[in-house]
Length: 208
Image 1 (cartoon, rainbow, N blue to C red):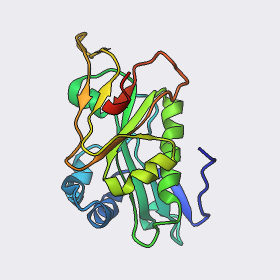
Image 2: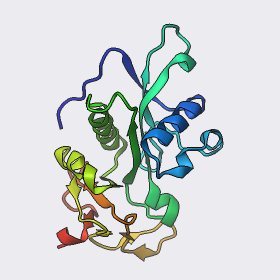
Image 3: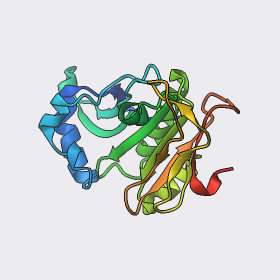
């Protein structure tokens, strides 16, 4: 991936609760099917924010359009990415895997490379945090975006599976298999730490 570039009018920051109204507005406009992101109040009560310092941490970068004053509350959120260790939180999978749950860019800012910028920043932070695999799901019409950024993209409705048994937080072993939302495709990027022997997540068609 090439070095990220950001226009001078925008600033990269870690999202926080005062961004809630803007995040809810942006989600309603750009992520119409993710209804749980549309409620402004839930942004204040549901903890989705984090700096992404380690594999179990949440990472929530935002791009803010800088206002005339120095108050961050005057800045408008024009893009965000929501990343967390979903398989750890939902199933106790202790592998250093991050899920890129959502990415959104404001109407009027599309096509300016902001989505690519955020994804590159997510990959950069994942490497710094010790994450080995980054994955998520996408509607088919956006699959080319992930392919261009170096992700392996599965087929429509194709499951994503670990290539081996992994250890859960409680000591049990399991081979995780994840099913996408109907009509969606998984994207995945393995080997972020340069490992050749670490457990990987793969679309079924690529399983060895």
